[in-house]
Length: 295
Length: 295
Image (cartoon, rainbow over all chains, first blue to last red; front, side, top):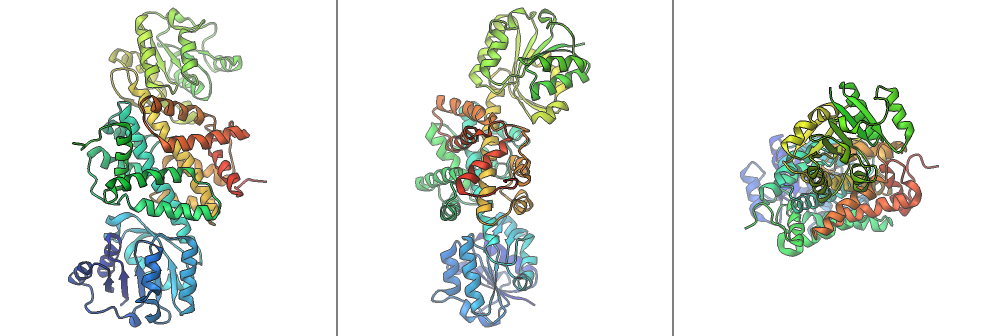
């Protein structure tokens, strides 16, 4: 029996907690939204406060580095109350240096740390089929294994120290964000040339212009359905992390910078909570074009 | 028996001519490089000058609109000598307006025109397995059918007038060019963060950051082999066409513009004839990074 706390019960964290319940773990949840904690209890989570000293693992599935640090080492941070040998699994998208710092601060307290950013979206989180880009000591991997087995379809083991997992996640987010913006740029450019979104979808996924993100997101534009599977506001955050890391390394990333500006324009014009495919609305508005679903 | 002339015997045109020979057509070739014409004759092409008045089809596989117009309507252009009902198949990447103009000028002379830009690269050209993004009248499609059957694995039929094929090709080239530059940006950003090209290749193609171009081109960077399958210099041309069309439509395309600048920097620094994956060298040089194969 593995005792696990999941800190952060958003769409990703809640899905991971539910997967851990299905795998037979005892699971405690924590979130700033009490209703999410109650919902997890109603679906089989443990009652009562998180028993920090008895936990085998803490999964931190919050939005960013600041929330991760607060959850672990803030005023009510859980790290000082964990038992020696417990593993902290850090799932937020953060800078590699931050992941290394968390590993070091955990090690000072006799805790293991797995740098384990996740990929795959809320549907795969709910079904226990995430991809995890993980790095950490062999001891951290061993202690995290029950959690990884319950939540991930694919675990990329990227090295024996924190940082490598977050570096690979940053590389993936650079591409994913650029590819969503490129899809939006291309599908709206097509409309300006008389290429309907339906024709775009029928042809481009079979051609050299295909990408995973295009195949996943272009149907949202074609159907005019911007129900948020992954929200616009993810990208100012994640591409911001990429560009912060890149600037520190004096790495010039012009496509990432251009994509970030488009997502910022989407967020700034009130589309932040819509599906990230809504960045297409920025392009359409700027060119005076009509998209499917427009009034 | 179909009598066909192929104008332009570069890697794409030569492959199409060879595919037409295999399909049993009588094929004449024309190129500014006499050795290419001789090579085609040696492999089964017809001897002697192109018998314009007897041809069923002319396939124009040159670099751009200016060469297409010269081949058809220039001082030695073939169009005025073709018989009524012959079909001109325009394969270069051109603006939709140019394709419409060619269709109209051909129609004035009783000629059919198929707007038929091609995709797939030289290997698929040689094996008769190209993708064709085609539009034109039903009569043009019917007359072009033996050529399409011999050269293409996939023909997208995009409408009954020239322009739609070229519009879809421009959309595809926008994405393909942006995705190559994004691959280069991501793989070199990864190097700056300690992610080796081998680790990149092992992980990213299985994640949300995948694209067709990434899977095709990233191995060139990882192996340090820039033998040109498709050259850097294609992209200043094709993304230039995209941005010309976009400007005419008052369409803002910031990712395409950023990608074009990276390909221009590659071409301007002497990499124009290398494989287009060599745009990664611009990123590496700008960040002081070493790529596989660097001395």
